[in-house]
Amino acid sequence: MPKVKTEQLVGEMLLPLLERQYYELVDIEYKKEGSHWYLRIYIDKEGGITVDDCQSVSEQVSIWLDKKDPIPNSYILEVSSPGLDRILKKPSDFERYKGFKVDVSLYKSVKSKKKFTGELIGWEEEQLLIQEEKDGVLSFSRNDVAAVRLAVEF
Image (cartoon, rainbow, N blue to C red):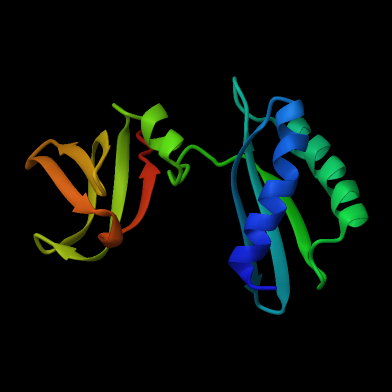
């Protein structure tokens, strides 16, 4: 089964299980690293995720996956929080984090740079908009954006 289809199938199947316990399914990754396949499930909830949350969800998801068996090959299951520098993917992510500082990575250089940091304005008609301190409002085409992450400031 292709990677994207596996992620989508597992996500659709897990969503009701997680929502009943007030967890948000942030992302799913199914990827091969070395000789092992990994199924990574990123969750969040109001007030943040604890190690106990990850353990509890991991145990429940493991039992559920064993029963449903949607993945034909063996894999390592990991359940985690999205982290401080969480990646923004869904429209709801971009709405929720408007006004937050983000790091934007591009596939190709713009103004001789592939990385920008600024305040997230949002998505408008396939364009990512950020407010950068030096250059003001910058707009990037959705097709040019490799990743958008919350910026971590110390």
